[in-house]
Amino acid sequence: MTAVIEDGTARRGDAAEGRDTLGRDVLGRRLPPLKERLYPPMPKDFEGGWIATLAITALAGFLRFWNLGDPVKFVFDETYYAKDAFSLLKFGYARQFIDQPEGAADKAILAGNLDVFKDTPSLTVHPEVGKWMIAAGEQLFGMNTFGWRFMPALCGTLTVLLLIRTVRRMTRSTLIGCVAGLLLAVDGLHFVMSRVALLDVFLAFWLVAAISCLVADRDWTRRRHADSLDTPTPDGERRTLGRWLLIRPWRIAAGVCFGLALGTKWSAVWVIAGFGILVFAWDFGARRALGVRRAFVKSALVDGIPAFLSIVLVALVTYTATWTGWLLHDNAYAHDYASKNPAQGVMKVVPDDFRSLLHYHEEVLAFHTGDYIKDATHPYASNPAGWPIIARPIGFDAVNDIKPGTAGCDAPAGTNCLSVISALGTPLLWWGGALALIAALVFWIGQRDWRFGIPIVGYVTCWVPWFAFDDRPIFFFYAVTMVPFTVMALALVLGKILGPARTARGQATPRRLIGSAVVGAFVVLVVLNFAYIWPILTDEVLPHPDWLSRMWFKSWI
Image (cartoon, rainbow, N blue to C red; front, side, top):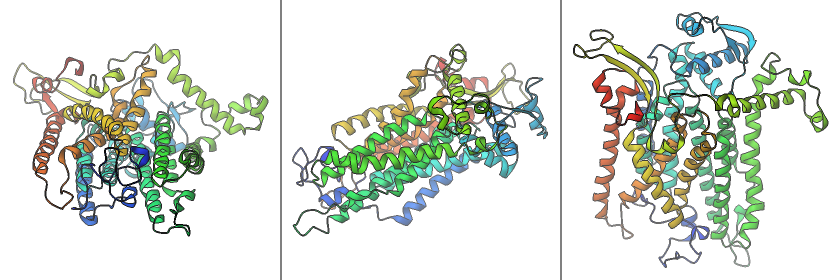
């Protein structure tokens, strides 16, 4: 990889990112040719890159699928999503399940009796994509703990693969991409969320998939801009053939992924908005680098409008399509709203099925913002201000007071054991990530390095909107969507510490040895930290003092 810049200190940017188009940056340093700046060469280790990628992905998969069916019970909100998913699979829409006596449906399912649903439809307070994905695992492996956890584990594993390839493309370094993937593989929060049938790991997967597509589109487009420089016009000016690239397949794919993310949880809307602005900045920067006159106006018209159609409109169409099951079943919750409430005014042009669907959305919004939920309390409620430093993680499951000699408890007499599943991020990764995000902001604004904008925009749009809802119970596990962007920022900053493999003359850099030691030590410490908290992530039986030694702060208990 002698041609690869692994720390991002060269081959960056364009005029919109703080550089002119005459071969020098704003500090007077010589830049690579414009064509190479538009599209730096990819690493030349295609086979080796995929071998490393698949090896780390296999490790992530092994960790996530190991003993996946245990514990054999419904963990936290699995009691809702696993049953809703099976209801979608069986009836095509969500039905209520028996609830008397309390927990009757859960006990029946675990005993093998799946006849637990009533004839009445159920209001589910999230869209259906995540539940259909859970249902796919139930279809393949049955309505059991492994079945409803299969797809979360698969999507958690695939997120690692996507992150490796995306960071590799951003940095032109297989090494930095693999560092990002390995760090995500050993994050405790992402690990736990990949092993329970909740929705948030699917949201993280689709968001990373969408952003992977946007990064691929940036390369795809700039490569065509760069190629157009080889074919000058008769008057000798640069030919910008890329100007008319109205149909960009990677952006359409990103729109589909964003739509599926929105169809998992509505909080994806903020990420769509943030990256919509960011991709416009990328297009504007490319045109300025090419010397296009009135670049902002042309980018707004030629790039902005097609981008809106490819990303936002496609996402909206995809999201609507995810409600097909609800639209096709007249017995679904509130499906008869329009027939009972004749349309007024302009709403007369809206088909009844879609008016009913709009009303359904109004009821879901009322649930999430109404007085009922604002007055609710929960012992594991967590203020988003504390998420970056893991101020208040959440316990998904706990069995306390396990007596010595039972259930594998080897505690001495007078001391009991317990088993827990704590949704706890790997502390060293999160705390290092918080510092890396601050550094990423400096590199993005100070050096105008476009790559650092991706984790900043992703992290902020997954985190900041939750402050508007901190008057209701919200939980740390929502932050799982922030983890890939934290890891991405860490990998980019570690690349800076690592330094380039070669100087401009092809000589090995002395800094590389020191950088490798620092980066390697940090990665090893994160892996060891993950191994240390493993028992409280996986429901292992621990003597009480051993559990307490992993609860580093009172707010973690």
